[in-house]
Length: 264
Image (cartoon, rainbow, N blue to C red; front, side, top):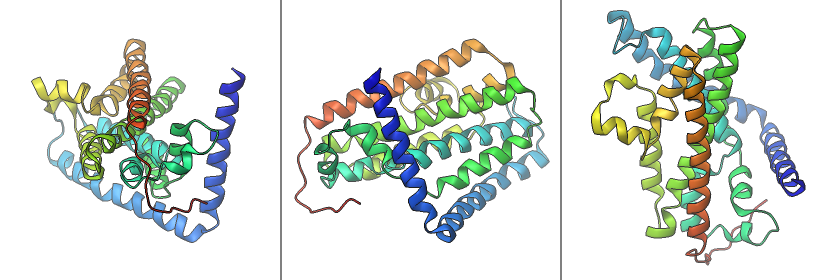
């Protein structure tokens, strides 16, 4: 437990340093966050126009879409605001940039993931919170479930992105592959899940866990289902275990890079 507390404190220290570093350039930080917020808003306009004409699609109405976007945006924002290196894992492996982390007396994976903050994703954080305000669900239990599901969705997002990046241990440079897989997950998580049937639905519950980022959390907040919440927790824990096992296995195949990289 003492070792665990030490590592948690280390991660929190990294987060504080990242935040302080980004706030040194407040104008840049805020402009990037605002840009991502506007980008999300433009994407959401499609659904506003759609539901202005069609009031319902496979059990989803505009309130469910607000909730879906709120959870996915907040989860995505939490994942990469704090674990900002997760989208760069494939590139860092391919370029041999793990050497820096391997030389330090800290667990490699958490140090790697939490040593960078992505300022763009702060726009996702704010968009998720504001989108939730339009759902009309202000009872304490719904708010707690919304926040809890968003955190679990964040864990799944970061874990899946990291696991996809570990393909670089196998094929040399999986930057494009990890990008495509991650975008497949985020894209499918933003659609009403009733649109998908059969093998595609199974695919989105297993290989690319988009259902656990979008559809399942929405149903949890709507129905207050503790059984589904337990399932989502299992999915989040499983994603972390898979990520850890794949990364540790990949490290045994890792070859040091020849480039000189300066890490500050």
